[in-house]
Length: 214
Image 1: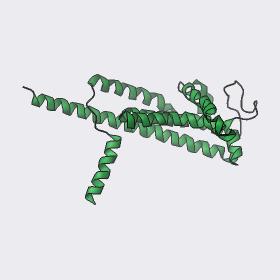
Image 2 (image 1 turned 120 degrees about the horizontal axis):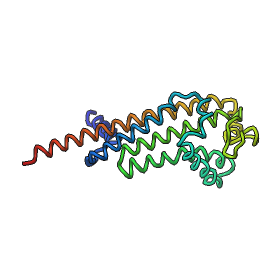
Image 3 (image 1 turned 60 degrees about the horizontal axis):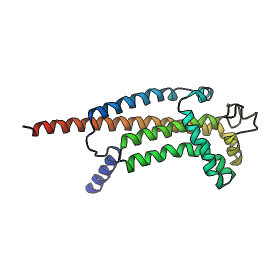
Image 4 (image 1 turned 90 degrees about the vertical axis):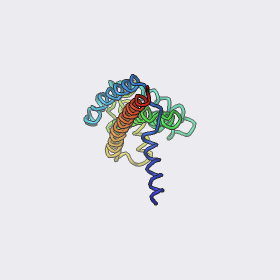
């Protein structure tokens, strides 16, 4: 039993804090700066109300990035029928950073980069939440320059109507917003833990090299 739990502990630790060759100090310092910038940018999204998110959506720097994948998703999923074509926009903007996470963590063996990709996925969920929240009111300004009411609906009005969940738009949007915030927050904690671990390993490796020197 002890061997079993020891193996589980090792696998969990290896997933979150994998062993890697010590990075250069300048690389670790650069990662620390990047983490600080991401944390500073993301902090307001943990405090803003749904209304504030809706009002400022088009002005957020990452919204344009999410929008590119959103529009691409409509094209990619267009062969799956109308429902998936419409859902594909929001789905793609969340799946793309998640796929980056998989590539960074499992192919690149880089937990820090993987954590930041997950943070981006969480931010994408936050980006989708006001869109869901607007399903009934249709006041959100869309890409074409008009509101959903002016163009007779938008993605999430169609999706929730098809699922008979239009009356739950606010509840669903709050759940998505909360999930996005949790993913963002926990991803930063993970990235910070990886960075601290790598700093310690680097320092320990340097000390050991010094002890072995002439």
